[in-house]
Amino acid sequence: MITQVTKGIKVSVQTSFEGTFFKNYKMHYAFGYTITIENQGKDPVQLTARHWDVFDSLKEMETVDGEGVIGKKPVIQPGKSHTYSSGCLLASPIGAMRGFYQMVDLATTEEFEVEVPTFKFAAPFAMN
Image 1 (cartoon, rainbow, N blue to C red):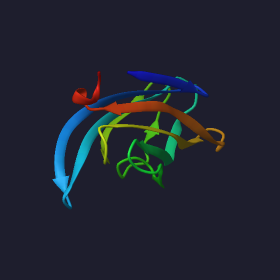
Image 2 (image 1 turned 90 degrees about the vertical axis):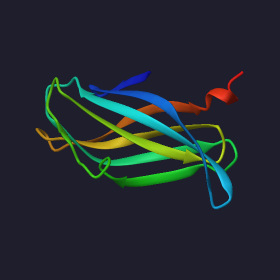
Image 3 (image 1 turned 60 degrees about the vertical axis):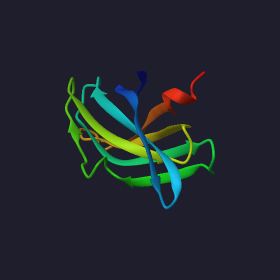
Image 4 (image 1 turned 45 degrees about the vertical axis):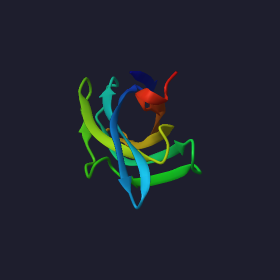
């Protein structure tokens, strides 16, 4: 598990290899990740947007921006956490993601970024 704390917000990431399949006559590698966002600060915060840089060893880096996470903009009270799972398709068995969440401190209305540490994807058979 990879963990990082930014401005009192702890982000922990766990990854998994989900398998391979063919799509459009090409092999794809499916990876899952579960992220827990824990508010260790004193004010409630809301996650409003996300930014991802997706690295695939066989393709150019892809950037993904969007509102919230998996269709939600969770409010996280002090001492509480929000956990969600998502996935990523790669053209190769090795890759990584990194990014940040756009957050709002609901007590001060201050917007800030919370870094998501780089987390790696590797199919078990690709490891040596």
